[in-house]
Image (cartoon, helix red, strand yellow):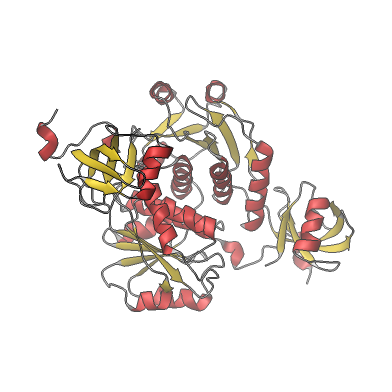
Length: 259
Length: 259
């Protein structure tokens, strides 16, 4: 398997890139690659490119895009709003959300949220690593942590918000999703202690909310989020599609004539 | 929230129990409980019992069951067969499987499984902890690790086996499950490197296999397992049910007359 790295810069044929100290260290000392070796790069906009290492110095490496291996894909428009949880669980959650194709992640502080400080930069690093390791062509945005109240006050009316109601207040999740139908969505999961009763009441009355039950058992906050993301992708997302890129390369039109 | 502990012994009114050193330490020094305090016990057979601590010594504690709080529940008949993965991921997987109601977990060694040694005792401890913390009334069995070949050779014909086919070989998972219908099931997930092509071919030809696709993205082994367990519970399991015990106590007939 070729090494895959996420970059911020644009990717195009002939447009050389310079990689920074961390990625250079990774290529040279962890993967033991050198000039002439191949690295796959993606940036969330230009697809995945096969690039060749031209030069490796101590703190930077120069790579040259050779051909586009996969065209950029568009993911279903799914956000995840989640009450922050303990460090290893929140990192796990970001990893899973990246694998499950969420485009935007937003920590929201609810009444019973005990973890109030979120290191968005660290979460971003986890998202990048998860995208690099699982063939994803983009990295989810990580929004700044914000009180749920103010997120709801500024909510875009056209986006439905699935309330994962651990008290079983809504219909079973598959039914709730199928009935509400496709479109732009966000999922909302609470903290370890759940939503406060008054918070749940208020949420249920908002016009953009779809409440759903995740079965009869208690799920931890991170499990509930993974379950909800899975259900959404199966019912309203793109799980009808197959992992086509594992069988065929999708070269860009530009690169198609090359050997 | 009352402390919940799993015990092996039978639970019945008036049948005092002795807890061992670890649970005694936990009660006395972590939770700082003493004589007269209440502990909830479950054993996977007799429901959940409210018990009172009668005596706490250095290495053992005596507790007396007072009344049954919840009748024993029967879980849907779902097993999970999984290729062992790295330590923190396998522990996470056992935790999630416990929350998601799996009754039997079995590590299976596939062609590309790199982790060949499994500490079943440690996994059991994780399952117990997950059950204690999430209101589950039982602990999943953890089978001994075994080559997939020999597990398949002795497979009970009446139990369907869902092959989570990361190459997208089967229909989308919700369709595959709905078409195959209810009954006794097991889910099978591969190692980080996936199933070998010959292994997949062989699996797909077995009469008890239902192959399913988990969408267009690469999922890590543990994510695939959580997604598959979720889908199974929503389509064929008990996710039509609500978490009723959060709203009402279900005393046993015996205890019903008590205050």
